[in-house]
Image 1 (tube, protein in one colour):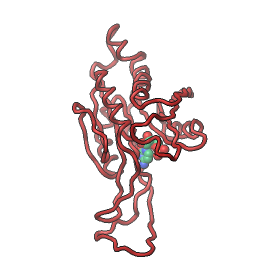
Image 2: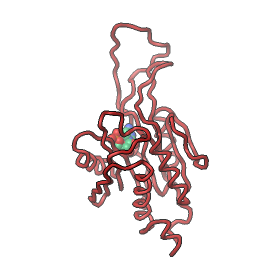
Image 3: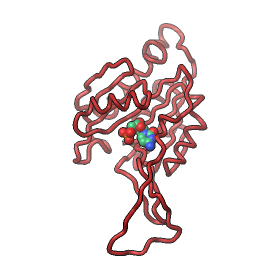
Image 4: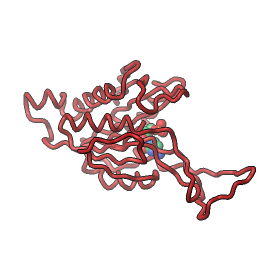
Length: 230
Ligand code: C5P
């Protein structure tokens, strides 16, 4: 899984980034570990701690995050892309600190859409996140299809700081079969639990907790790759 923002450098002391803290990723990692999954978190610079038992790979820029996920994606049963990847990076990087001036024109280039380009295997479950203003579910539905996701957790961005950090979010869970579940205002820890229930149903046909008490799951050693954020 992936977590946190990326930082796209402008010069040796400045960068473009976003308000992501990594809290959603930390909650997801904690919930997945508590359920017995192996978890690798590829994360940008976080302001929230990750569980001590997660395997953590730290990166800074979107391109580094892509390389780190690419190396691990093939082996993962589940890829959760919760990182708030910067959609743009400065086209040019200044070797020396840019001097103060009245006006500075920046040219930005799109970063690679990581989740769409990761190598996959047929039984893998791929999960994305989306922050939307306006018609959240409709926009999220388009992203689910365009990025070929199995699940997408969409959150409403209201411009007042939400959905970043520890506050509850207004969320919707979308599935590849077209189901849209309105979760309403929900804590990130509860949203992690709902999401992992759904992931386990897709992976094993039932929740892992239920599976372990009744019959063996498909994989005894599930491996979850998380790119986390929010
Ligand atoms: O930014 P956007 O709304 O398109 O993000 C939707 C999903 O795509 C998220 O899961 C995000 O982590 C992922 N993403 C990505 N690479 C990018 C931008 C977003 O994998 N460059």
